[in-house]
Amino acid sequence: MTDIQIHADFDAGNIEVLSIEGATARLAIQRDHMSDFAQWFHFRVSGAAGRELTLKITGLNGSAYPMGWPGYNACVSEDRALWTRTPSTFAEGDEGGSLTIRYTPSSDLAWFAYFAPYSMERHHDLLADAAQCEGVTLRTLGTTLDGQPLDCLEMGTGPVSVWLYARQHPGESMAEWWMEGALDLLTDPANSVGRELRRRASFHIVPNCNPDGSRRGHLRTNAVGTNLNREWAEPTPEKSPEVLAIRNAMDATGVDFAMDVHGDEAIPAAFLAGFEGIPSLTPAQKAGYDRFGELLDRRTPDFQRKLGYPTAPAGKGNLAMSTNQVAERFGAVSMTLEMPFKDHDPAADPRQAWSPERSMQLGQDCLGALLEWLEERDAG
Image 1 (cartoon, rainbow, N blue to C red):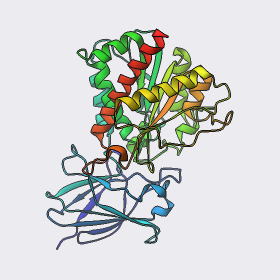
Image 2 (image 1 turned 30 degrees about the horizontal axis):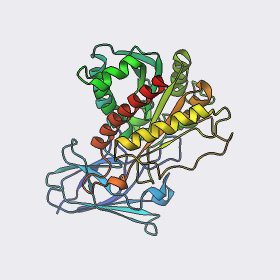
Image 3 (image 1 turned 90 degrees about the vertical axis):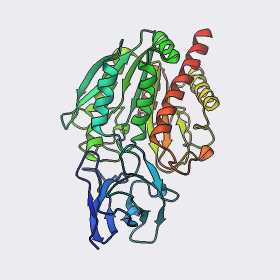
Image 4 (image 1 turned 90 degrees about the horizontal axis):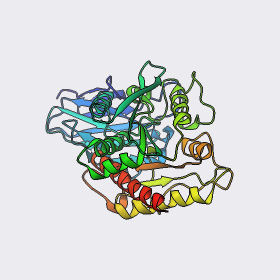
């Protein structure tokens, strides 16, 4: 029987083929360019209709987050529209840590990925659709090291300055699915939540902070191996022009509320991370952050406040990270939203686990919570 074929030389593709025998393959993840980060994979398998695939990704003890593999099931799609999960087994002691993915395609093509990809083509479609909506303007904040535009969508007439930005870490593609859901709500003239948000606030939205890393198939860095979410204290044109452009734009508008959208490899839940360790923390800032979490927790079962990251001690917050820098720099209520690569265990979905659809819905739920938050803020 003929060997399957595996390819990854496309937008956001990432895999190294070590060997193929029939419908079995040994694979490895390529590291981000000029970096040691590796976790994102995205590849295509052809010639396997009706055959059980056994795909073993090796060397994972040396990946960025080896604790993310136990309990993880790979994403698979045969039409690149619906992404489901397929049984995957992690063995720490096998070939430097291996993830064995098993799947039987019904057709001759199947795509596998760490999470459902959000391609640069879809990114440009998202921008084009939003930019045509009434009251929306598109501003190019700068150019990346690979020569791609760094775009910001702006809308709303209210006095509160809101910044929403995603995919500082490009492999966290659920963040741009979240953006698509949020933008669908904000640009829909028939949506009353969107209309009221645009009346109360002015929105500045960067759907993809790291286009270069996204297209290159990176997990965490830009074209020169820079982790953008460690550059916010001193961004440079040489290493982090993306952060420099966004922070300069924030300086021009000011920031009252900010959300930096991410994905987490290990924790099986959606959660928030805040800025409790910044030097100039005020009770009002902390209360605003806590209240938003309460409102979001009440609104959707796809969010929770029990699992999350440890809180930084007072005065020890890392100001190179965006949420801390924005809170310290502007006195804003800022936060990092984390969504899982695995599943949101409090409301688990065995077929899809965490998915593009749930990411988009959470984007809309976050905006619903933001409207409640703004109403309470204005009433107070």
